[in-house]
Amino acid sequence: MTSPAPLLGPASRLSDFFTTDEALAAGLRPRDLAAGDDFRQVFWGGYVKTSASPTYADEVAFALRVVPSAAFATEHSASRLLGGIAPGASNLHLGTTVRHKCKRDGIKLRFYTHPPRLVLVKGVWATAPPQTFLDLARSLEFADLLVLGDSLVRRSDCTPSDIQRFVADSSAHGASHARAVAKLVRSRVDSPNESRLRLLMVSGGLPEPTLNLVVHGTTRRASRKIDLAFEEYKVGVEFDGRHHIEQINQWNEDILRREELEAMGWRFIIITSSTLYAAPLDVLKRIADALVLAGATDIHLQQEWRRHFG
Image (cartoon, rainbow, N blue to C red; front, side, top):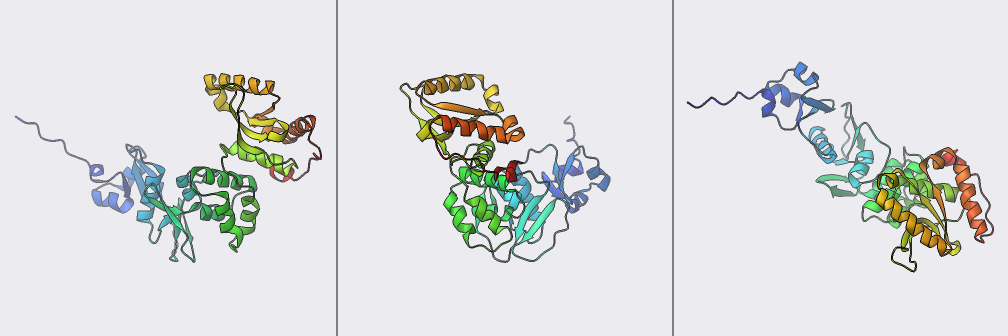
Protein backbone atom coordinates (compact mmCIF):
# COMPACT_ATOMS: atom_id res chain seq x y z
CA MET A 1 0.00 0.00 0.00
CA THR A 2 1.44 3.37 -0.97
CA SER A 3 1.85 5.92 1.83
CA PRO A 4 0.05 9.21 1.27
CA ALA A 5 2.21 12.17 0.28
CA PRO A 6 3.00 14.48 3.21
CA LEU A 7 0.92 17.60 3.46
CA LEU A 8 2.82 20.73 2.44
CA GLY A 9 2.67 23.83 4.61
CA PRO A 10 1.75 27.31 3.42
CA ALA A 11 5.42 28.30 3.01
CA SER A 12 5.87 25.71 0.26
CA ARG A 13 3.56 27.74 -1.94
CA LEU A 14 5.83 30.77 -1.73
CA SER A 15 8.86 31.58 -3.82
CA ASP A 16 12.16 32.29 -2.08
CA PHE A 17 11.31 36.00 -2.03
CA PHE A 18 7.82 37.11 -1.11
CA THR A 19 5.82 40.02 0.26
CA THR A 20 3.61 40.16 3.33
CA ASP A 21 0.50 40.09 1.13
CA GLU A 22 1.77 37.01 -0.70
CA ALA A 23 2.51 35.29 2.62
CA LEU A 24 -0.96 36.00 3.99
CA ALA A 25 -2.54 34.81 0.75
CA ALA A 26 -0.61 31.55 1.07
CA GLY A 27 -1.97 30.95 4.56
CA LEU A 28 0.81 32.24 6.80
CA ARG A 29 0.00 34.36 9.83
CA PRO A 30 1.81 37.56 10.88
CA ARG A 31 3.31 35.75 13.87
CA ASP A 32 4.80 33.15 11.50
CA LEU A 33 6.70 35.90 9.74
CA ALA A 34 7.81 37.44 13.03
CA ALA A 35 9.19 34.16 14.38
CA GLY A 36 12.47 34.67 12.51
CA ASP A 37 13.35 31.00 12.06
CA ASP A 38 12.23 30.28 8.52
CA PHE A 39 12.14 33.78 7.05
CA ARG A 40 14.32 36.89 7.05
CA GLN A 41 13.04 40.38 6.44
CA VAL A 42 14.89 42.07 3.57
CA PHE A 43 12.97 45.31 3.99
CA TRP A 44 9.62 46.28 5.43
CA GLY A 45 7.01 44.06 3.79
CA GLY A 46 9.55 41.89 1.95
CA TYR A 47 10.97 38.56 3.06
CA VAL A 48 13.28 35.78 1.94
CA LYS A 49 13.35 32.18 3.09
CA THR A 50 16.31 31.39 5.33
CA SER A 51 16.77 28.16 3.39
CA ALA A 52 17.57 30.16 0.25
CA SER A 53 21.00 31.50 -0.70
CA PRO A 54 20.21 34.74 -2.52
CA THR A 55 22.83 37.05 -3.96
CA TYR A 56 22.79 40.77 -3.39
CA ALA A 57 21.58 41.19 -6.97
CA ASP A 58 18.63 38.91 -6.14
CA GLU A 59 17.68 41.13 -3.22
CA VAL A 60 17.87 44.27 -5.34
CA ALA A 61 15.81 42.64 -8.11
CA PHE A 62 13.17 41.70 -5.54
CA ALA A 63 13.02 45.26 -4.24
CA LEU A 64 12.65 46.58 -7.78
CA ARG A 65 9.72 44.22 -8.28
CA VAL A 66 7.98 45.34 -5.12
CA VAL A 67 8.52 49.10 -4.99
CA PRO A 68 6.24 51.02 -7.38
CA SER A 69 8.11 53.11 -9.95
CA ALA A 70 11.56 51.86 -8.86
CA ALA A 71 13.47 51.01 -12.02
CA PHE A 72 17.17 50.65 -11.23
CA ALA A 73 19.79 50.42 -8.49
CA THR A 74 21.62 53.57 -7.51
CA GLU A 75 24.18 54.92 -5.03
CA HIS A 76 25.43 52.23 -2.58
CA SER A 77 23.45 49.46 -4.24
CA ALA A 78 24.75 50.35 -7.70
CA SER A 79 28.28 50.57 -6.33
CA ARG A 80 28.06 47.11 -4.79
CA LEU A 81 26.63 45.57 -7.96
CA LEU A 82 29.38 47.20 -10.05
CA GLY A 83 32.11 45.91 -7.74
CA GLY A 84 32.86 49.32 -6.32
CA ILE A 85 34.10 49.69 -2.77
CA ALA A 86 32.18 52.09 -0.54
CA PRO A 87 31.20 52.20 3.15
CA GLY A 88 28.43 49.77 3.98
CA ALA A 89 24.79 50.84 3.84
CA SER A 90 21.90 49.34 5.75
CA ASN A 91 19.37 50.26 3.06
CA LEU A 92 18.85 49.20 -0.52
CA HIS A 93 19.18 52.21 -2.81
CA LEU A 94 16.85 52.38 -5.81
CA GLY A 95 16.23 55.02 -8.46
CA THR A 96 13.18 56.27 -10.32
CA THR A 97 12.28 58.90 -12.91
CA VAL A 98 8.71 59.09 -11.59
CA ARG A 99 7.95 61.09 -8.49
CA HIS A 100 6.98 58.58 -5.86
CA LYS A 101 7.55 58.34 -2.12
CA CYS A 102 8.71 55.03 -0.71
CA LYS A 103 7.91 54.57 2.98
CA ARG A 104 9.36 51.09 3.29
CA ASP A 105 11.97 50.85 6.02
CA GLY A 106 15.13 49.43 4.46
CA ILE A 107 14.74 51.08 1.06
CA LYS A 108 15.83 54.52 -0.09
CA LEU A 109 14.21 55.70 -3.33
CA ARG A 110 15.88 58.53 -5.26
CA PHE A 111 14.13 60.58 -7.91
CA TYR A 112 16.05 61.58 -11.06
CA THR A 113 14.76 64.51 -13.08
CA HIS A 114 16.52 63.17 -16.16
CA PRO A 115 17.03 59.45 -16.83
CA PRO A 116 20.61 58.54 -15.89
CA ARG A 117 22.79 56.28 -18.02
CA LEU A 118 22.31 52.68 -16.92
CA VAL A 119 24.20 49.42 -17.30
CA LEU A 120 22.90 45.89 -16.87
CA VAL A 121 24.78 44.13 -14.06
CA LYS A 122 23.96 40.58 -12.96
CA GLY A 123 20.50 40.91 -14.43
CA VAL A 124 19.79 44.22 -12.68
CA TRP A 125 19.82 47.71 -14.17
CA ALA A 126 22.10 50.05 -12.26
CA THR A 127 23.49 53.54 -12.72
CA ALA A 128 26.70 53.52 -14.78
CA PRO A 129 30.02 53.94 -12.92
CA PRO A 130 30.45 57.70 -13.56
CA GLN A 131 26.89 58.40 -12.45
CA THR A 132 27.35 56.23 -9.37
CA PHE A 133 30.53 58.11 -8.50
CA LEU A 134 28.75 61.46 -8.82
CA ASP A 135 25.73 60.29 -6.83
CA LEU A 136 27.85 59.12 -3.90
CA ALA A 137 29.87 62.34 -3.91
CA ARG A 138 26.93 63.81 -1.99
CA SER A 139 27.66 61.66 1.05
CA LEU A 140 31.19 60.19 0.94
CA GLU A 141 34.29 61.78 2.42
CA PHE A 142 37.22 62.50 0.12
CA ALA A 143 39.18 59.33 0.87
CA ASP A 144 36.11 57.08 0.63
CA LEU A 145 35.10 58.62 -2.69
CA LEU A 146 38.62 58.14 -4.04
CA VAL A 147 38.52 54.49 -3.02
CA LEU A 148 35.18 54.18 -4.81
CA GLY A 149 36.49 55.82 -7.99
CA ASP A 150 39.63 53.68 -8.09
CA SER A 151 37.62 50.50 -7.51
CA LEU A 152 34.99 51.32 -10.15
CA VAL A 153 37.74 51.87 -12.71
CA ARG A 154 39.44 48.65 -11.62
CA ARG A 155 36.31 46.53 -11.97
CA SER A 156 34.63 47.96 -15.06
CA ASP A 157 35.44 49.35 -18.48
CA CYS A 158 35.16 52.87 -17.06
CA THR A 159 38.34 54.97 -17.14
CA PRO A 160 39.48 57.87 -14.94
CA SER A 161 38.90 60.17 -17.92
CA ASP A 162 35.31 58.93 -18.21
CA ILE A 163 34.63 59.94 -14.62
CA GLN A 164 36.42 63.27 -14.97
CA ARG A 165 34.51 64.18 -18.13
CA PHE A 166 31.18 63.15 -16.62
CA VAL A 167 31.51 65.36 -13.54
CA ALA A 168 33.26 68.26 -15.31
CA ASP A 169 30.19 70.35 -16.08
CA SER A 170 27.74 68.89 -13.60
CA SER A 171 25.78 71.21 -11.33
CA ALA A 172 24.42 68.37 -9.20
CA HIS A 173 24.75 68.45 -5.44
CA GLY A 174 28.27 67.29 -4.59
CA ALA A 175 29.64 67.91 -8.08
CA SER A 176 32.48 70.20 -6.98
CA HIS A 177 33.56 67.58 -4.44
CA ALA A 178 33.35 64.92 -7.17
CA ARG A 179 35.54 67.00 -9.49
CA ALA A 180 38.22 67.44 -6.82
CA VAL A 181 38.36 63.70 -6.12
CA ALA A 182 38.07 62.66 -9.77
CA LYS A 183 41.39 64.36 -10.50
CA LEU A 184 43.10 61.71 -8.35
CA VAL A 185 41.22 58.63 -9.62
CA ARG A 186 43.64 56.23 -11.26
CA SER A 187 43.71 52.89 -13.06
CA ARG A 188 45.35 49.70 -11.79
CA VAL A 189 44.79 50.33 -8.09
CA ASP A 190 44.62 46.97 -6.35
CA SER A 191 43.17 47.82 -2.95
CA PRO A 192 41.51 50.54 -0.84
CA ASN A 193 44.65 50.84 1.27
CA GLU A 194 46.69 51.63 -1.84
CA SER A 195 44.22 54.41 -2.67
CA ARG A 196 44.46 55.83 0.83
CA LEU A 197 48.25 55.54 0.96
CA ARG A 198 48.57 57.35 -2.37
CA LEU A 199 46.23 60.08 -1.10
CA LEU A 200 48.40 60.49 2.00
CA MET A 201 51.50 60.85 -0.13
CA VAL A 202 50.06 63.34 -2.61
CA SER A 203 48.24 65.45 -0.03
CA GLY A 204 51.41 65.40 2.08
CA GLY A 205 53.40 67.11 -0.65
CA LEU A 206 55.22 64.12 -2.11
CA PRO A 207 55.33 63.56 -5.88
CA GLU A 208 52.72 61.16 -7.22
CA PRO A 209 54.11 57.63 -7.55
CA THR A 210 53.68 55.22 -10.45
CA LEU A 211 51.10 52.54 -9.67
CA ASN A 212 51.97 48.85 -9.89
CA LEU A 213 55.23 49.36 -11.74
CA VAL A 214 56.71 46.09 -13.02
CA VAL A 215 60.47 46.02 -12.53
CA HIS A 216 62.46 43.35 -14.37
CA GLY A 217 65.61 42.09 -12.71
CA THR A 218 68.39 39.84 -13.87
CA THR A 219 66.46 36.66 -13.03
CA ARG A 220 62.86 35.55 -13.43
CA ARG A 221 62.36 35.78 -9.69
CA ALA A 222 63.54 39.38 -9.60
CA SER A 223 60.65 40.56 -11.79
CA ARG A 224 58.28 42.25 -9.38
CA LYS A 225 55.25 44.52 -9.34
CA ILE A 226 55.74 47.44 -6.97
CA ASP A 227 52.58 48.95 -5.48
CA LEU A 228 53.73 52.59 -5.52
CA ALA A 229 57.05 53.37 -7.16
CA PHE A 230 59.36 56.31 -7.71
CA GLU A 231 61.27 54.77 -10.59
CA GLU A 232 63.68 57.68 -11.02
CA TYR A 233 64.96 57.23 -7.47
CA LYS A 234 64.44 53.46 -7.19
CA VAL A 235 62.20 53.87 -4.17
CA GLY A 236 59.25 51.53 -3.78
CA VAL A 237 56.42 51.92 -1.27
CA GLU A 238 54.34 48.86 -0.55
CA PHE A 239 51.37 48.11 1.62
CA ASP A 240 51.88 44.92 3.60
CA GLY A 241 48.44 43.64 4.56
CA ARG A 242 47.13 40.66 6.45
CA HIS A 243 46.88 38.58 3.25
CA HIS A 244 50.66 38.26 3.22
CA ILE A 245 50.56 36.48 6.56
CA GLU A 246 47.74 34.24 5.44
CA GLN A 247 49.56 33.24 2.24
CA ILE A 248 52.95 32.20 3.60
CA ASN A 249 54.35 30.85 0.33
CA GLN A 250 53.52 34.04 -1.55
CA TRP A 251 54.91 36.12 1.31
CA ASN A 252 58.23 34.24 1.26
CA GLU A 253 58.45 34.62 -2.52
CA ASP A 254 57.81 38.37 -2.22
CA ILE A 255 60.64 38.66 0.31
CA LEU A 256 63.09 36.93 -2.03
CA ARG A 257 62.09 39.15 -4.96
CA ARG A 258 62.39 42.23 -2.80
CA GLU A 259 65.91 41.22 -1.71
CA GLU A 260 67.03 40.77 -5.31
CA LEU A 261 65.69 44.18 -6.32
CA GLU A 262 67.35 45.72 -3.30
CA ALA A 263 70.61 44.30 -4.58
CA MET A 264 69.92 46.23 -7.80
CA GLY A 265 69.67 49.48 -5.86
CA TRP A 266 65.99 49.61 -4.99
CA ARG A 267 64.91 50.73 -1.53
CA PHE A 268 61.54 49.60 -0.14
CA ILE A 269 59.37 51.30 2.44
CA ILE A 270 56.84 48.83 3.87
CA ILE A 271 53.64 50.30 5.28
CA THR A 272 51.14 48.40 7.44
CA SER A 273 47.53 49.33 8.14
CA SER A 274 48.33 50.17 11.76
CA THR A 275 51.00 52.71 10.80
CA LEU A 276 48.95 54.19 7.96
CA TYR A 277 46.04 55.08 10.21
CA ALA A 278 47.75 55.52 13.57
CA ALA A 279 50.86 57.42 12.50
CA PRO A 280 50.36 58.97 9.03
CA LEU A 281 52.97 61.69 9.62
CA ASP A 282 55.59 59.05 10.43
CA VAL A 283 54.70 57.28 7.18
CA LEU A 284 55.17 60.50 5.21
CA LYS A 285 58.52 61.21 6.88
CA ARG A 286 59.80 57.70 6.14
CA ILE A 287 58.97 58.03 2.45
CA ALA A 288 60.32 61.56 2.25
CA ASP A 289 63.59 60.53 3.93
CA ALA A 290 63.99 57.62 1.49
CA LEU A 291 63.49 59.94 -1.50
CA VAL A 292 65.99 62.46 -0.18
CA LEU A 293 68.56 59.73 0.45
CA ALA A 294 68.00 58.57 -3.14
CA GLY A 295 68.80 62.05 -4.46
CA ALA A 296 65.41 63.74 -4.66
CA THR A 297 65.36 67.47 -4.08
CA ASP A 298 62.64 69.96 -3.30
CA ILE A 299 60.84 67.56 -0.95
CA HIS A 300 58.78 69.65 1.44
CA LEU A 301 55.99 68.07 3.43
CA GLN A 302 52.68 69.92 3.39
CA GLN A 303 49.80 69.91 5.88
CA GLU A 304 46.92 69.08 3.51
CA TRP A 305 47.14 65.41 4.55
CA ARG A 306 45.64 66.34 7.96
CA ARG A 307 42.35 67.07 6.23
CA HIS A 308 42.03 63.39 5.36
CA PHE A 309 44.05 61.64 8.09
CA GLY A 310 44.37 64.11 10.96
